[in-house]
Length: 303
Image 1: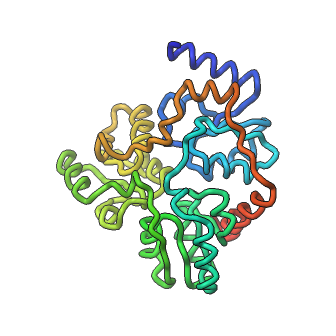
Image 2: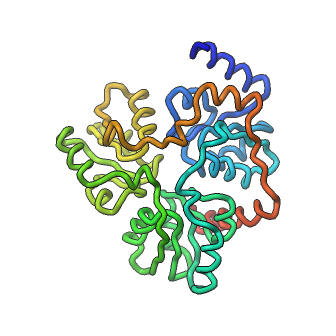
């Protein structure tokens, strides 16, 4: 089926069924253009609460659809690609966290939003990459187990020196693959360009950046300057910005790097199929309430 025909069918299907499409910024420009709301994972989950519809389609990965369901239990939540998950979200078993808490009761468990509902359910507070520093600064606990991303956790630790941190060996495989040599090479190829990077990258990489921030913060930073920028996060951000601002000097850190395969599982065909008979996210109410508790705590601390 031709692309234009598929897009027409998607629009007809979503409008006839009053289904709203949520698309993470890492999605392809074609998906972004069809979305009713675009943004990062938590922003999408919050936005879904206010949408005037019974059904939403998450164009992202499974934990994102779960987070929508946690916050909007009465909505029917579809996932665009059933196999789309987040490797980092699955790297730590909830039982390991429970055992740590038993051995170290003085530690509060801070879970990155990029976690399964089961892992959120055994945590004390959730954070996003943009809110982590602010929330941990405001928490009463002096000792923090930060899961699952050790790189983001170490970045937060550098900003909150008054607290002690523990980490497990989790990370985002995409962002963790970036090396200091990659940055040196990119700066050599694009002299004078600024470098914006996600805090999920290694400490030696973030140390070389002009700006470190979440996906949405990187976009805001780039839009606030006329300078050329090397973009050190998933390539969907560069693709999105380049499509909107083709005249700008915006460069991917490396052409063959920073591609989230799970995010790219969502294609126009997958969106169309999901609108017709996509996977519905189901969640036990007890698990949902337990997973919602750390999200409520995030709001309490200003997330």
